[in-house]
Amino acid sequence: MKEKHLDIVRHVLDHQLLDSNYVECGKVDDVELEGGPGELKVTAIITGPGATADRLPGLLRSLAQKVFSRHVTRVPWQEVAVITSEIKLRSRAENLGLDEADKKLAGWLGKLPGAE
Image (cartoon, one colour):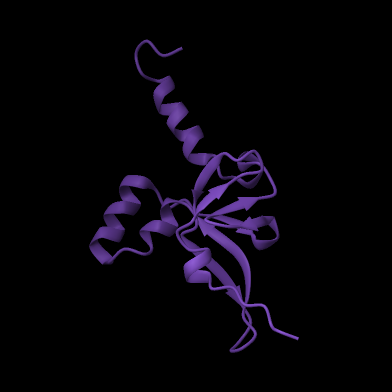
């Protein structure tokens, strides 16, 4: 029997996330693994501005965290439905906490003069 392997770097990292309604809801910034050598399993997708900032070198990391936030969202691997050039999830973005940036932006826009 042939073993199944997934090239995380090629097929998952930096790919667009789509919720169950095909709405773009972020990119895969990191993955969470458990196990040891030869037995690693992906347990979650990590996304959000805090996860993106963690990939930057020191000074840029600090600046990005101050400007964009440190918010990170963990999406359980069981939520992944299909992996193609995009990562399709089983649930809606708001059910997974992937709509935080939208909520924040709506709050800021709602405070602008003339906004209703």
